[in-house]
Image (cartoon, rainbow, N blue to C red; front, side, top):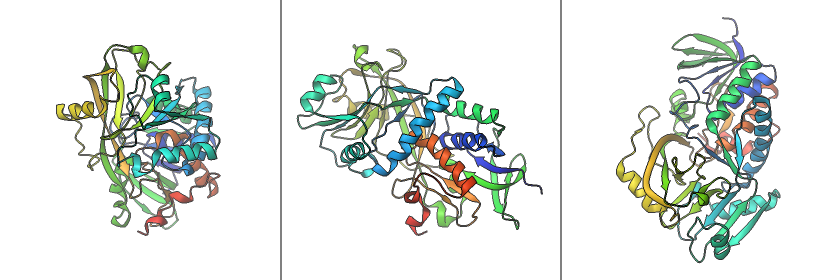
Length: 388
């Protein structure tokens, strides 16, 4: 069978659409395949907004990826003519009372360390300064805050659409609503890929399938990927919209007494509310069996957990959305060649914090496929750390 393309990218969410664009931009013959019609609501790359920041609480090693992603998002905005990023500033608040936190790390300390190491513009605040500068938030007397000037949010659906459009302009082919059945290595060191609509022989297969990736790997590796159910809530604004407009309200990440949570300004005004989500991880689920229904009890529990910190919101839940986070055992990324088939690249089920970096990860994928190495240090994302 004749080789179909240089690379087939499976999954066209945040990472896949970025890899498709970056490879096509470099003149590679590339095919993108998705079992749905992206951007869609079934994976991990929807919900109107995604936080972007450069001082990274999950670990300072992510900051170079984020810095590069900022450059690429601006480039993609320019080429596409679409607005993809809004800078609001970003506020991390530590109330000092909860043992659980985002990705089970000392998020606040890591954030400050990263900002100092990479000279990210920021300032630190005590409790009184937080109350004065950000009256939207009710904080404890021992609270401390970190404000990053360049933080803000991305529009995920527009990001995906823009990169797919640009990729097509550079010659990429996109197949939507096509599901992979299996893949295997050929005697010629290429990869044979069978889908429900056809079959392909490709030089490289890039697996960006998110929560579906474990279904495609053998058990020695599939156990490293755990899909979890996440919920976003949009709560109504009680009275003062000015407190929550993008002009006055930063994106925020708060370590509360009961649970960590994060949120966004009201990007569509009073009627659409303020988006809030938990900062810890939900229950494990199947990618195809996730419960998309959000119960009244889940809504009530979420509001009870945040209401003391955001008194300007009311219990009226305007809407909800569910998505999938795919966790690795240490909550860090995987970007590495699949040991079973060396021409297959496993790319970054992101443990809930990957969208902000996705433009840069797409560039990393292009460099790995074309050059065998990346300009960005991705050694921390290798499979060998798990000893499968």
